Image (cartoon, rainbow over all chains, first blue to last red; front, side, top):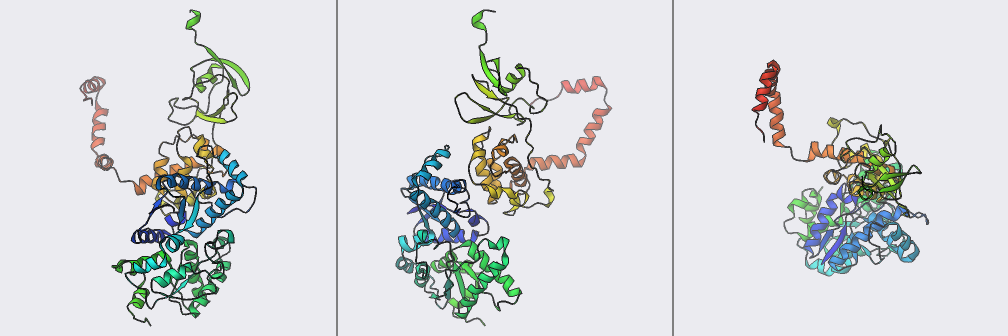
Length: 293
Length: 228
């Protein structure tokens, strides 16, 4: 199975690790993510102003490109890896479905592209794993069970808010937990799992991000997690960089590693995973039942 | 001259005033035929320098079109104007102090983050470049792609005129090509050899020999030169 795939800017810069791992995981599970031949930024945030159409052009262009590639691959799905891109693309798509007049207008404006017909379905990589492959099948393909590893799946907000675009329960999501259980990991329940990491505030109001992250990691640690797992590049970035500041300020007494779900999947689905484990010696220790300190 | 051999005239409107000019003239020639003189906004007259970017409109068409005035011929009912210069923002930078980190272009031209992908730049480009795509490539730090896509840019500035995000695309592309040349693209071996030769003084010797010759001697070696 081949899926049209939209990376987004972050996956090509600060989130490269996520893309590399996810593309390999896809192959290991028997599907392929085919990058759109040309794509633009998603728009970064979904503009809630009801009469400003210009801010939706970026996402619309991507939907058209997905429509073109979808014809070749015989699918109407477009897969994203970044939660923010997922959120923006899906909200713009939904806006057109609910407002055909806006779709008509935008098609008139974009006179160098084919019309967008409104039929694309935006899905996140997690949905492919959970719905199209399924935890049972993933379990069968596990080469290295993640036994002894206590993982805290952290969703952040972009995948589950607003309700109209959420693909899992907004209060107690289970998709990531089910996949991690299939890999043999012990899944921690953290009530902060759907709280915001502070998102773009990292640029304008770093203190706000520090507060958010402190709450998230403090509970994660008190529950005994070895690692926080996230599908979102912005959450990964914020959780990692904010912990450094919090640690320096003495607001947390230890740091907890934050890695992409795709990375953990790759470690678990490959036999010779030495190369992938070299940055994560603590995981190696757990897998080999060495307790650390 | 027989009536039938006469070049037919077409009506054009230059800054709103009607003129009859021979068909087949370029926009630039038509303006000159009508009595205008270019002191700026004209250069090579061969489509390479990008100095003569202009906009025009055709009768009964709502769209403002764009062209290089030296490369496009007049049509009946054309509305013409002259754009002398684009006063666009151009950063001064020291190539020795730059790098190719993913935000290298963003640092010099942060306004590229304002791109909303409206594609106005691509639509206006007389070189038919994918301007929006190279701005987007710049945004995500893909210097090689930005350099390749903008390679045929003649720096006419029309993209910057049209951009609702006030990006100076053509200067961003130029920086991308410079960074690509310095850090990404493979070095040309023959250039390095040539530079080494220059530095070794071979050319200096030849030049001083030429300088010492009289006119007849120079004529003689000119006649004997090898022609590729």
